[in-house]
Length: 303
Image 1 (cartoon, rainbow, N blue to C red):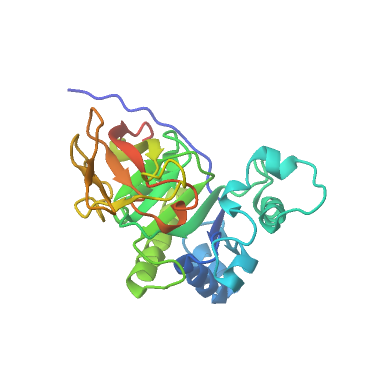
Image 2: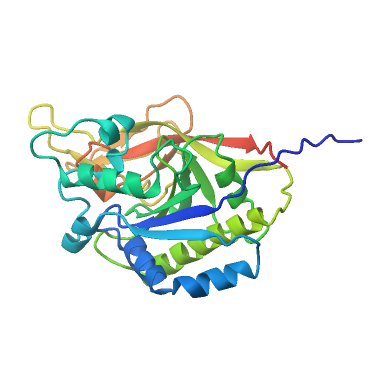
């Protein structure tokens, strides 16, 4: 049987940014970017020139210096929520939260967002207290960069992709408590970043990638903890049978919560779903217990 293959040519990725410390207490990215900043630029460019005609420009950025100094997620507001067009382009008056000011500085450095002069790929490094391993969070299911990094012939290192409305590509790895650096998590993140950069060089060299299916998850909703109707205090914790089972199927009637009085609350949905960010520390303030995703198989359309 003869198979027809569609050849699609895509522009090279000349400028890549690796950002750590968007949340100041997620330390793997903070320490990794600090380590990358120690590498002499001239040495990096010399090595890259040996592999390709045009060297890959890698910009290393510590995104939220003030939050890093205080080892806090943020100073005034979550920097990750400050990159909408309205926030970046709106008028400022009175007292402006630090992260809003910083988001505009980063936009000028890496963008401007949506302009032709923006960097080609931003890899934003994050830690989670959830047992998610290492995964990529991409902007949409049309993000061909993520799908090919996942299935790169260099090393099939990254186990899962999540499609969610987030800017650029986020590398999320856990479990790791916030404000703590674990060597195993740091090493895995370092390997993931190197894998991503290796793939970019591989792609820029003109390598052809065969089309194939990609195993992904897509986010559909999130749920909050059970709460007291009057005080709004949380009344239950993650059930022991669910804790640390990110990306594992949750079936109807499976244990979901265990109340502080000892009662088991079960999942009442009609179909199996896959929870992730289970018991993420930073989501307590946002009213999120975990997010629900469904499991998909997406065929890569580029070869």
